[in-house]
Length: 219
Image (cartoon, rainbow, N blue to C red; front, side, top):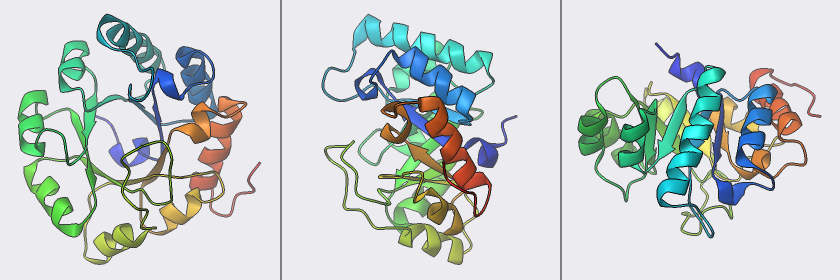
């Protein structure tokens, strides 16, 4: 059984459109650097579809399995079921939490993006495993991203006694990651901070140090 809070600590999201070199190489470096969970998010200009998307998903999933890293799929429930992914992550515009939970089964991880206490309560009721909250800071990765709100919602949910595992997302860097943990999140999720770094390995290592070791010197 996966320790979900620990798995969320250094959460890497990536697809081919986010990479400066081969996605498999980026993922291998990120794993060597210390990521704890991976989400396959094949979206954006030039993103793969069909058989090519399936093949890349299988390749990256195999790398994750070889290193005991949970492998999630963003939005594409059919793909997640077809390759027996460890779980999925969905937004508020996707299929309902309840429907997705029924489709993937009780034992899979189901991450849900939430933007208010009301959405959070509904996600808990309908079977979410964790919340993705953001964008915490401004981001250019998602064209339709909502305005950044800082750590307000994370702090509000924790103050109200919410014990659901939480990961922050959006505009997160090595420099600001620790503030999200201090606000009450279990982890941080990043895309370009690792995928477009000169050294994904060193970027992942620095991010891990910043969130796991309080007051760590960033390098």
